Length: 570
Image (cartoon, rainbow, N blue to C red):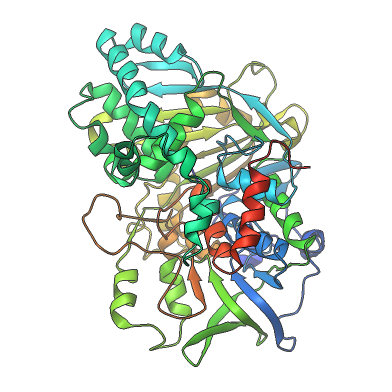
């Protein structure tokens, strides 16, 4: 459930922001504010300075890049993370306006604050001695075909009651069956942490330490982890609603239905959400609190974060990636590696012609991209709204056309329900979005300043308004701030190829080409949501962790594994 838009911290009129502002919100955010934000994280540098020498340079200051950079800094590497935007966090960053904190991306989290944690983000934060203050809850509101509007819980059998009342006994029986089916798979999915993975022979040691746990899990269940989840339930689960529900859960996790989601991912989710007393968590300060914790982990260990630093080219000498060139002329040389968390398509544009084999380049560029998003960000007057308003609302229009059909699924997050600091007193902040299902093609050729573009924004945002109205029927009368984001918003501000949610298409295709962090170009690593296993906060954090561990001796990684298996970060 990762959405991607940004707000610029300079004059919206000067930058031609594609956000739609209502008549109330015409304030310009000043350049001075941008400078203050830069100072909060790093002393912003002019990109015309002389060459800088580092061990590792990381392209992209999102979750994956910050995980890689912070771990490498902790291990003693001299690291610089370069981020094109003026705010760190990538697809998970936030921005403020008139007392509201707007979140660009994910809002549904679990397991990050556990010690020990099975969540790769939680494991990195544990290793960095960075704790998150969270609010815990276990409910969300569903607006679904067949069922209607009901509240459901994680970590209990309350969902069985919902099925019994709204769907039928057959659905109850199949949900019980799927929970039983998933028990050994869920156990297998958490046996081998991504933090233990590396690409040299020492992996036999780092993974080998988990053999005692692995032998407790039947090999048949372990082998199923890399299969599409649809294969696991084929012939065993037949009820239309349960099949649709599992497609929805898979889509929220990976950006693909069950046929395109690894069983390992859904196994992780079952272990985290459907065991007794499970809970969801929301970080105080929102997604930016996670980003800030990773930035602290980077900088306190001597790493650097350069904001507003756009990479123009990956420097290659002697068949090896040796650094990056920034817009403005500065260069950052890297003696060990360049790690790119930009999309694979955007990364290929940074490489000099002929620096990688054409066959590998073609296969990489042929990676299937997920669709993009529509976003609606609102600041509203909350007077008279119920105190028990739910933070999350999931809206599905029609099961029959598929959960990944355009505008068929909408997610609504009212984060200030759990963290009132995200909105002024008596107000709420709302983010509604279509998760990875908005086609880029219908936007591709539009001029952002044209009436045609404005009209299409108005038209395509109506499904988001209708979804919010299910939670707050009179929301249009309450609006104080309104912003609409489109695929062009994402493509422009996050510098993402076609505004994509990430990569997909590796699971269950029978293809022998699965992207890995290593590349044919010595010293270049590719991680992020367009690399296997695809989108998702845990997935990109795992990718960043694996890339970092490819660059340090195994005994340092071993020490990190010792630490994250303990029950306290301090």
